[in-house]
Length: 168
Image (cartoon, rainbow, N blue to C red; front, side, top):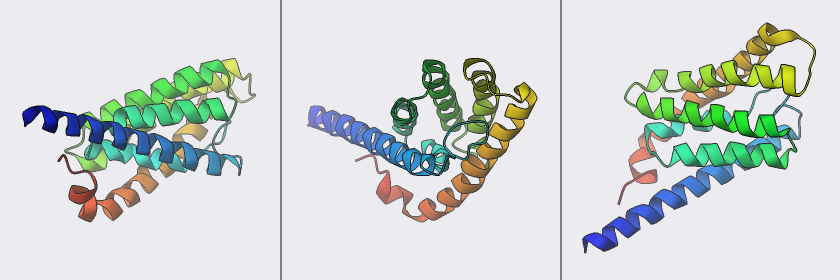
């Protein structure tokens, strides 16, 4: 009986991860059609999903794979695919570690992207503006998407979280 329970847990974890990755990718592609998913000024609404590690560790690979796929589908440079996905992974891990302090949960996502993405914009893409400017624009975009939208998502999901992210 325990073997069946472990398999069920694995399937649930993989399913949640895949759904989160798909949702992240779709949201990024939609906002990308408005020119807001990449570049010097970006507000990826998909970053609101970075609140999900509060309820499930499956969000960590889900968010990372979603970012990776989004960056590939948007034909980003390899540096953006690699380091953007790394920033998302670090943000998701940090969010998971801070999951008992909901208001702090988006902070690792904001910090990771604000520190990692600007050098990619400046050096890989060669955008004009400098690191400080990109840190400001990316940081503000992350505050809007990960913090503001993320906290709205948190409060919307909180009453339903036990049912949505149940372990069994």
